[in-house]
Length: 128
Image 1 (cartoon, rainbow, N blue to C red):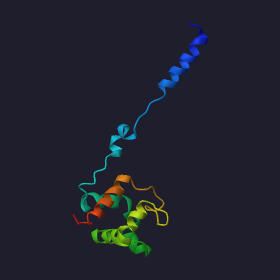
Image 2 (tube, rainbow, N blue to C red; image 1 turned 60 degrees about the vertical axis):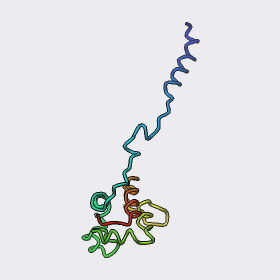
Image 3 (spheres, one colour; image 1 turned 180 degrees about the vertical axis):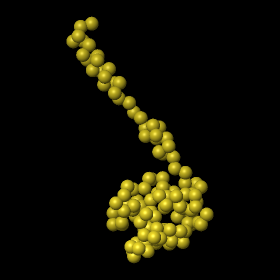
Image 4 (cartoon, helix red, strand yellow; image 1 turned 30 degrees about the vertical axis):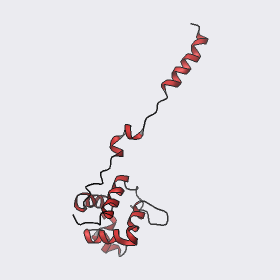
């Protein structure tokens, strides 16, 4: 085969070998799975709050700063989750325009954490 005839063949082969169609949920199945069926305050919400909120909204910081919201403990977190027809907290953690984005100066919470908080609120915010 002459080299001139090989160029289109090689180009076509290179083009076809670089094309594929992968779906995100097939490549990363753990990223698309979020269990919101067994959400509990103690088992689900507390770890999220401890990891993402209490550095600024814990009792010690809240008392020393004189402002903001204390999210430490069930009663405090439930009060915050109840504000604004249950939308203030959700709008802040979803970083909706017009609301203070939380975590402040931080990365938005993972979508599953937000869905689990929303599921807990929709379930009536039980102390379980």
